[in-house]
Length: 83
Image (cartoon, rainbow, N blue to C red; front, top):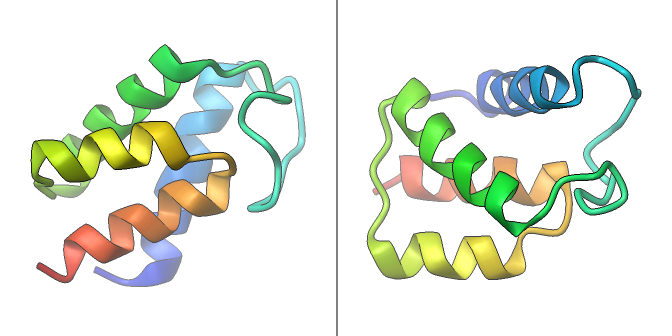
């Protein structure tokens, strides 16, 4: 899967959660956008399903703890897409 496609999918999903009320870029902090740990967890599971990716539980747990920006989510999905 191409990096641009993954990034676009991440941005589209975040926009839906935010109901398109804010502009953001890859460096936007998820918590500053109003997304909490539960939102991030939901995003990871949804995006994996939408993109046809599967991560090990440990990888998902690490990402839930460390995802701070939209770019972090894209990088994680690109990483697990390489497996």
